[in-house]
Image (tube, rainbow, N blue to C red):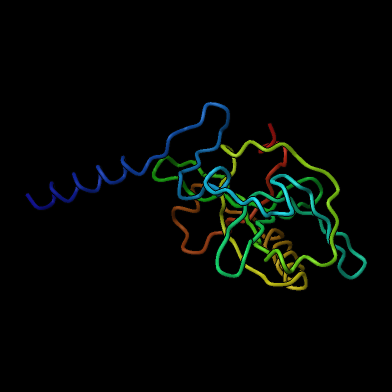
Length: 185
């Protein structure tokens, strides 16, 4: 009797964890992963969602796109997703028991006061129903942003595990590149 009860509870829990699919995307973004876009009004922000921001480090130009903002007692934190060769730093993680993966973006949040040597080159119109946040770091200065970028490149040189392998592996490689086109309108 206890086994049947445990199986019933486990089944109900797994079914209730499935996420709603968006009609305009192959993304299944549960609310817990969504950005703060439309959740908070930040009127004193000097950046816009979708701004392409370039930094220069060691004679190398690093591109990123602003996809989120957070606010706390230290001020505004700007959510940057790095761009390499037109692709975004992302990750794919298992979505419940469906055997599919959710595609999320990896962000570095830079405190607004930490922006010192950058330029905004353009702005992309983004579909925030397609954007979910995977991992994130918070940094106070651009030097640490560059460290995050280099670490992200290194992680994406590893072979990503398939969605099926991610269910069976304790330390799967989730990091990958996602197309910028996936989050554009």
